[in-house]
Image 1 (cartoon, rainbow, N blue to C red):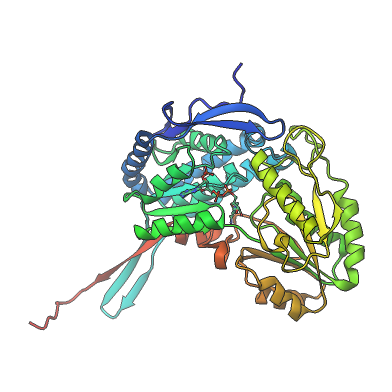
Image 2 (cartoon, helix red, strand yellow):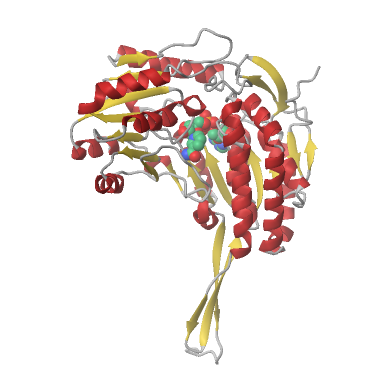
Amino acid sequence: MTHPAQPKASHFINGEYVEDTAGTPIPVIYAATGEQIATVHAATPAIVEQALSTAKAAQTAWARMTGTERGRILRRAADIMRERNHDLSVLETYDTGKPLQETLVADATSGADALEYFGGLAASLTGEHIPLGEDWVYTKREALGLCVGIGAWNYPTQIACWKGAPALACGNAMVFKPSETTPLCALKVAEILIEAGAPAGVFNVVQGMGEVGGALVTDPRVDKVSLTGSVPTGKKVYAAAAEGMKHVTMELGGKSPLIIFDDADIDNAVGGAINGNFYSSGQVCSNGTRVFVQKGIKEKFLARLAERTGNAILGDPMDEATSFGPMVTENQMNIVLGYIEKGKEEGARLICGGKRADMDGYFIEPTVFADVTDDMTIAREEIFGPVMSVLDFDTEEEVVARANDTEFGLSAGVFTKDFTRAHRVIGNLEAGSCFINSYNDAPVEAPFGGVKASGVGRENSKEAIKHFSQVKSVYVRMGDVEAAF
Ligand code: NDP
């Protein structure tokens, strides 16, 4: 019998599901059991061509609609997503393995937030009037044209919406390629947009590996590429986009610092560290995986952290009591287990976890290492799994310098009751998305994105509009034209 997660077809182009079984089969594996639940096919060159030409053709009419009309469609799509939240969350859980306890509140819901927010902004994308004596300049905020979105596997619904919603609000069309690991959810986003009244072709989904992504990025008809992925992929995609002088948004990886001063409320700080390391089993780009704890509270912090981490409930992700799911794939599990072994070898002190959980699926126990030093591999490289490194520090000056000593710059957090210090420290940290006495909140109203190797551009908020539109300026002369000859 066909599994309920099996989509009608692999791709969604020009308002309908499209199949081409000549493409390489991509098995969809449910991470909680290792069972194959669906198959899609990578896009063939013919499918890529169909998606790009369709999107290109649909974009002009879409951009000519009023912002109010476009916004209404996006807001209707948001309503549909919320009505179907339960089913979409179950699908997200099948796609990623993340527990339903999370997907019910963090995936389709945050996708709907983006559709609603950018739907609301769509009508307000105006230019300015610049008086110049008798003459004047006016500016127009125009769509970029055809945008490509490429997603990572940790938030397939959210990433499709975080890219699709601002792109469409500005009058662009999009071809979106999900990660081959999680191909299911973006198809539902495309389906819902059509149901909400989006013209066929303005949001299309094609499946495939990096080579399909590469074909999309290098196509001369494409005006912008928005990627969520790792730094090495980001460098390749950025370079390919530069070749064609295309706009880019790069949402890449991190190794973010979370700094806990000795005046912090311990339970809040522990809560922040848990949210910043173990949500989605640690598969979150902005995670605060270098937890710097001031020496005076170190042992108290570790004791409370170990106690609360012991309360994680590993199990069937479809059971709403489960609070901690598996790694997305067997491969990702093995990568993370490799880092755990490195941590042990390099002399970090294991506080809890540290191994594969004794159950079906790709579960790793939430793992905490203490006495981690700056040079250890687990403190330098992005692990993308449930592995927290706790490092000690003495002074503010020291911790800021150590926190910044990384190529990444996505996020940073600080826990302290001293607000002057909190703002000073955040001001000195090289990171794009920061938190004071909190960690990993990502409301659509706030800009999200990194500095240094963690990325270029911003998603969400009014900032995202700037990255999906461009300004045309028009000089208007009222008098005669003076010329030298
Ligand atoms: P990857 O960088 O491996 O892949 C990202 C996407 O790019 C996938 O869809 C991938 O396809 C595609 N891709 C790979 N090579 C190319 C290429 N040459 N040209 C075009 N597209 C290509 O990342 P993961 O999927 O493994 O995701 C984990 C990473 O994503 C982590 O580093 C994480 O930090 C980062 N991330 C960043 C976020 C942010 O907002 N800053 C949020 C979430 C994750 P395929 O996988 O199918 O081969």
